[in-house]
Structures are given as C-alpha cells and as structure tokens.
Image 1 (cartoon, rainbow, N blue to C red):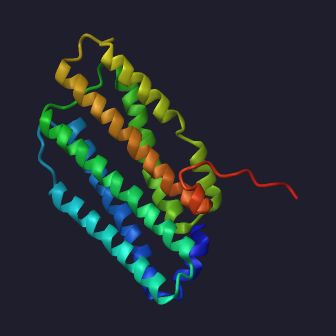
Image 2 (tube, helix red, strand yellow):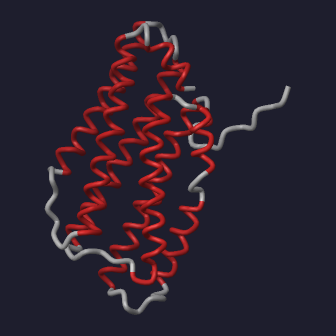
Image 3 (cartoon, helix red, strand yellow):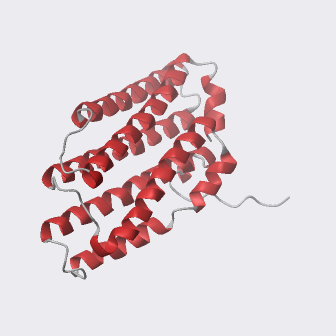
Length: 226
C-alpha cells in the first residue's frame, strides 16, 4: 500500500508533505521512547534531556498537519486517492498513540524515581525491551523504504510480546515475587503494558506497508500461487 502512496506523492506537494510529517513523527517518538526508557530503567533521577510534554505537543501538531494536508488534497482532487489518504491518517493515529504511551513511561519514572528493576521478571523485561527497540528501528526503516519483503518478515516476529506481557501482569497481580514492593509492582505493570501497546502500534504501522486500508493492523493475506 505504501508504494502506491509514494507514487501519488511524487506529483502532489500536500501529500508529500503529509508523508514527510509521518516520518518526522516516527523519528520523534523513537527519540522520546529511548529517553523515557533510559530514565525509568537506568537512572536514579527523573531528569530528561528534553521536555517530554513539549515533544508530545510536537507529535500532536504533526498529526494535525497530516490530517489537514490529506483533507485539503482530497478536496482539491475530488476524493482521488481516497484510500491513500485514509492509510496515512490511520498511520499517524498509531504513531500519536506511541507518543502517548512513551509519555506514560515518563510519568511512571516520575512516580518511581528509583531505578526500576524487574525482580524475577527482569530477564523477560529485558527481552521485551530488546524486541520493542528492534521493532521500532525496523518499522521506521520499512516504512521509509516501503520494503514489503522486510515488512512481511517483521510482522511475523514479536507476536510473543503480548502473551509474555499478559502472563507477567497476572503474576504481578498474584504477587509471585514477594521481593517486589507494591510501588514497584504497580510501576512494572504499567511499564509492561506500555511496552505491549507500543509494540502493537508499531505492528500496525508495519502492516500499512503491505496491506490495503481495511486490513491495517491485521496479518497480510497469503499470496495465491499462480
């Protein structure tokens, strides 16, 4: 689907600008995510290199600009490339939600200023963090290059993240690790949920590379032979 959009954008300034803004949103939310994770997991303070609220406002501004440019394009062209416009609007909604969950991670860090450790769940937490990190970088790459082969491969990976996250959330509720304080347990539960949702929204963005609008967020249909 993204290849189709790119072919349209080459001849249209409004849509080209909208697409570039979606790039900017992805890059910005990735920067926000890395900083939020660093403060929560590797420091004993809550000081960020930038104001997360200002960055969140910037993401929201980009989203509005994309909507406006897509709408104006559709008005000027009598609805031509409607599906392309809908895909872009859908994508930026997912990216904006990633920004929201990143902001949530910062709020967790502010309420839990000590370095957050996963206790008996630390190995699983590191595994999920690595998965989200890799998913983020590869999603940005396949989105910018519209690489359908790489996108299909990425979609098949990290499907285990929701399952592992949900199991750990239930274990936290059951207090299976008595060494974890109630405050840390709450922080971990919120953090696991944020990672799970970021992973899901990244997957939605990746599916837009290979799927038509009505199948964004779902696994691609298998290509029929012949």
